[in-house]
Image (cartoon, rainbow, N blue to C red):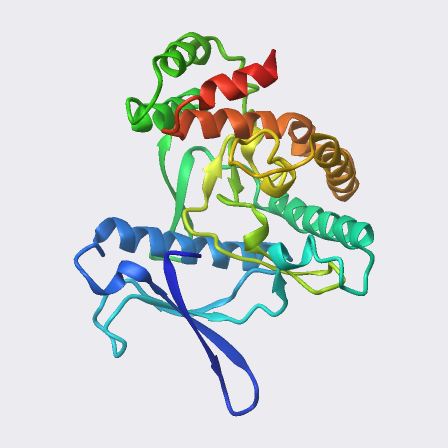
Length: 299
């Protein structure tokens, strides 16, 4: 991620390791909260590696303190080969035809993320920590979808918002028909965008990276949500994208995910997950006019 410093180390036999240092790890900004976040990421990656076939970095060693030979918190992880999807998604010069490559990416990503169903449901929304006996402990603080979305709004309320945004929020949020998360909450990648997907040039998936701040979440924005890079028309990030084209990719991704899950389980949330993602983005964003933009799409 952009908040980390990465060193790639090649051993004498050609084996590669990645040493990952958090950017604030050497100064006073590194505190107990940051240390717990790193420990949570390690627990999450190890859980995924143990219970699924998702290609994530393997964590060989880590230290959340500065009391080591490096003098900084670090993670020692496996190297994920390939190129970031941002370099491959639009490149017209690669050997594999563009549309074939894109569909291959979507299908491979859907198959991998469907694996998160193996983890089952969790009782709370929050981060994961590993107990002394190696068990996974939920560090919640949310028991309902509504409290989760309300927290993100309250955290950013007043920070540059227009009065119209605040009025819409206070009118819409209490009446919003949350879909419910019977069976608990599920683990979700916090930033499932193209820069965190590693692929070969033909579109085959090699890894999903940057699980910083991964947490359990409502099922409507869980592992069955659309990747952000095919939902830019709903999340107002200033990215120029064709709605018609993105709708086609969402249809294909939903088909691939449904095939991987046998048309069952949380796949039922995928169809409208981009709307929930936009709603969540509006809830936590401090940018002016975001609520207005999202609500106009719902009308």
